[in-house]
Length: 306
Length: 212
Image 1 (spheres, helix red, strand yellow):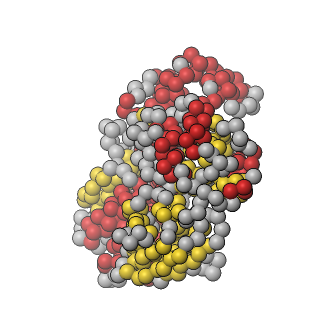
Image 2 (cartoon, chains in turn cyan, blue):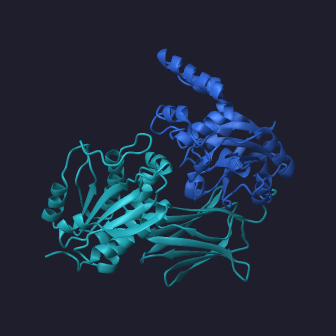
C-alpha cells in the first residue's frame, strides 16, 4: 500500500447485534487503513481507546449512538497526538475489544446489553397502535392512513422490548376495530407497568410537524415517562419537538403510567413521506424504547400497581 | 483488479462545499493512481446546490394528481417532488413520459416513463431519501457528472465514479473515468458501502491490487 504508509482511521459506526451464542451486544467498529498499536482503559462511564501512530482521517468530535446502552463516541487527537476514542455508556456493561485483521483493519468494541434486560425484564408493557378498522385516524395530504402506519412502528417496538425481556402486549396486529375502552381494559387487566399508544398527529395546517408525547394526567409518573420517551424519540428521528402535554382520556387508565406518542404529523407533506419509509418506523421504535429504558432505570420496580 | 474497499466518513456536505475539494481532503493520503474513488450521487448534487426545500416549490394540479401513482415506497410520492421533476424536464416531456408509462402498463412493460421523460429523473431523491439534514429536501440528480469525475481524477490521480446505490443492491454508475472496469466495480458496491444516514460515508475508495 504505497500511498498508505501511516494508518488512518476512516470510519466509525455502531450497531446492535445478536450473536449466535445468544449474546446481545452494542458494537462500535473503528475502521482504518491498517493496524496500529492501541490500548483501552475504563472510564467512570465508558471506555477510552488510545491509538498510537494513527491519523484520524475523518471529522473529529462527537458521534451520537443512542442505542439504549451507548450514548456517544468522541473521537479526537489528544495533546500527545494519540487518536482517542471515548465510548460513553448510559448504563454499566462489560466490554471486550477485538482487532479484526483485513482491509480495512477493524477495532471492534462490543458491549454486553444484559443490563437492559435487568431493567426491562418481566415488565408488562402494553403497546397500542391507534385506530384501526373503520377508524382510519389521520390522513396524509397524499394518501397515507394513520391506522396503517402505526402498526409497523408498534411491531418494531414490540420486537425490541421482547429482546430486552419485557412482557409485551400488542393491542392489535391487523386492521381491526378496537374501542379506546377495549384497549384500556387490556392494559388494566394485564396490570401493565406502562402503556404506550402509537399515533401520528393530524392538523388542518400542513406546515405543522414534529413529535409530541401525551401523558396520563391521573398519574404523575406518566409525566416522567412522556418526557423520556419524547427525548428519545426526537433524538432518534430528528424532527421538531412539539413537547409533552396531558391527554385527559388517558386518565381512564388510572395509576398506570401511560403515554400516547405522536411520532410525527401525518398531515405534514414531508412527514407523510417519512412515514412511508422503513427508517422512521424503526427509529421511532428505538427512540420510544430508549425512553422506556430511562424511565425504568429511574423508577425501578417501585411503580408496579398493587 | 480491485482488492479491497474503504468507506470514508466525511463531514456533512453542503452546498458550500466543492465536492472535488472534499474528495481530495478525505482521500488525498489514501487513494493512489489505479484505485477508484466512488462518490455517492446525492452528495455531488447537494454540493451543486441541487437540494430543494419543498416550501419553495408550488405544486400544480397535475403534480398533485400524479403523485398518487408512483407507488407507496417510490420516489416522487409528494406533490412538490413531482413538481420539481416536471420543472427538471419540462411539462410536455414529462407528460409524454406519463403517457408512455400508461401505455406500457397496458402491455405489462415497466420503465417507459424514465425512457421517455429522462433517466435522470430516477435520480431524484424524495424526502427521507437522503441523509439528515437533507432528508427534508428534494435532491435532484447531479449536474455534469462526467466533468466531476474528470476533475476528481485530475485532483487525486485516482480513477473516479459517481454512483447511485440503494439498499436493494441496485448499482448505477452515472459517470466514470476511462480506466474504470465497471463490472467489477458493481460487485464491490452492491451492498451499499456508502451506507445510509448515520453511517455518512459518501466516499468509498476501491483499492487496486497493485497498491496493496
